Length: 466
Image (cartoon, rainbow, N blue to C red):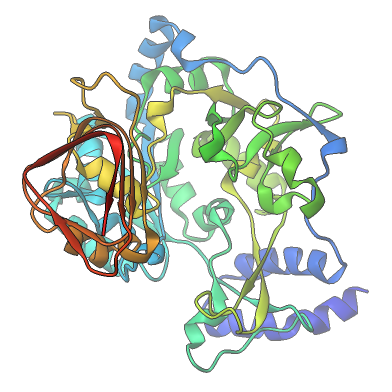
């Protein structure tokens, strides 16, 4: 069997070596490719797991513990997952360069947060985001003085043709033959880049890792103190689940008590209704984690630098924009899946304001509005003058999905949403100055012609035009 796997894998190894991928990355990909050839799906069945009870709540952590976290700040680093391009919004550069609030981009805000705390900032970039992101951060020379490199690169792996499990070829765009191996790749990338060793050699013991597009993910001394005080090797931030979060993964336990992360891609199709049951599974992984770097080093060495995280087998087309292109498997892992790799890992319940991602133009419009404000220490929070929860925005994807389309329809300013509970826009509508949304607003333009609105207050009603 091993000879057969070696033969099948040889063209993948050759491709990866030609792209200067490290041997550890090749070995790791072979581990997951072997599972694919053996017919493993990566599915986890509901009958084999149970819910996680008694999750510690960050809001109940004492000030004494927060003081421990404050003292540990000098041993901590901020690590941001910064490999995304924001292609769903039509972007072609690093998504973190997108202007998000006033004149500031994601990276501006992240950099300012790190500088305010005097904590090193490290980015895990993809090959597509490395150059642009580092060039952008040259405007913050103090970031470069920590003695720690500002970035390291995640790996990339070939996509696997579903028909015969060979490397896919796509002459129209050879770059599409490759895929990122998921953010679970961070652990081996920390090793191959020597970033893990460099951090430890410099005296850093703890890392807070989160997505660069999650504006709620900031250093919290209570959680850092909890990590230090409990000597936990790994903490996963989880938030209460709503209907908006049904696609996200969440921590569960095997029947033997071992923690694991259950992603929807690891759920058998016939059991997806169970995975999406927010009454049964009422917390979700925000993809913000805290990790003891010493424990990570020890665990990586023990396992030959491969944590052997559960495989996620994603079924896609080689060109995501062409449904008739070759069907492929993209083999990935999730960084949160490392909750199962460490003895003593814990989930920690956080308030919802620590999870504020911008994945679509819906969230982007809300964040840019006056419903949110940027604090003096560069945190984006709900406007203190607002008495409502975060606004829910639903924009017609035909006219607002891409950034250029959104900005062409809000060319002057974003309407006031300070007192807006929800906003739904259907059809082509352009907004001028002095537009105020209040309460629950539904705008419908059923005509083919664009409608222009300005100097108007729209509140608590459905407006039909055209």
